[in-house]
Image 1 (cartoon, rainbow, N blue to C red):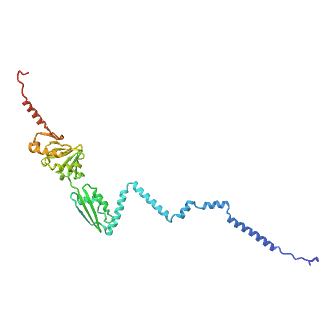
Image 2: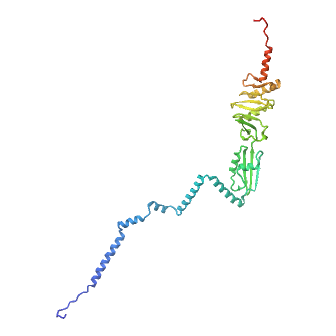
Image 3: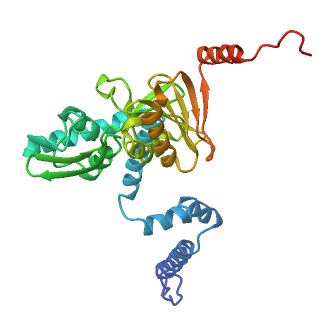
Length: 329
């Protein structure tokens, strides 16, 4: 009982209820935060998309091998350097430098060319053969391209065939077949030395070719071998011939050493040469005072007298002409 005589009732403490309420509020807050993490806001989604890489980059990152970018960069730099070399006109110097560098390495490794044997040369010197083939003091046997050397040698008109052998560690053997100087060919005032197949060997500058037969005219170099062989069958004519002239690329004229011109027919030149040889033997044709013999027609031979011979012949006919008698009508 209390002090007023009333029966006192027991009362529960309010603390447990407050604790339950606080716990419920905390659970609700945690639930909201958890749901907020699971459901991002529009702003958070926008920032997330901005942080993600583009699809192409993501695809490349997944499928392109590692360090491919570095390799591509190196290739780009090399391509740029190569373009600069080509555009600057330094390609030949660059190639020569690379070749010299690798040859130097090979030479230091024991593949220096220490012995050279060249067989078959007559007109060309050893230095000329090596220079033609592109072989020099820096060349190494290891990196020497035998096929390339052979093609360079065959490009020289004096060389018709070539064989190149590399005998390791340091011997080079070259076998060549040279063309022979056959005749001199004159065209448009220029004189050249030719072989029997018509190849131009070199311009005529050396006196050692002075005694070669002379052919003149366009196409004469290709037909010289056949005609000069025919002419050689008639020594009487051949010995006094100074030049054979190809006319119209179809027939020949002869210029003799005394200036006499002989016009041969287009067909059967051999028969005309035989007739010419017989006439000189029997009639001393080449010793007569004539300047030209025309044999182009098969059934006749025409001679042209020199001016002095023609004048003397005309005066002779005047003297032989009978004089008219006085009183004749």
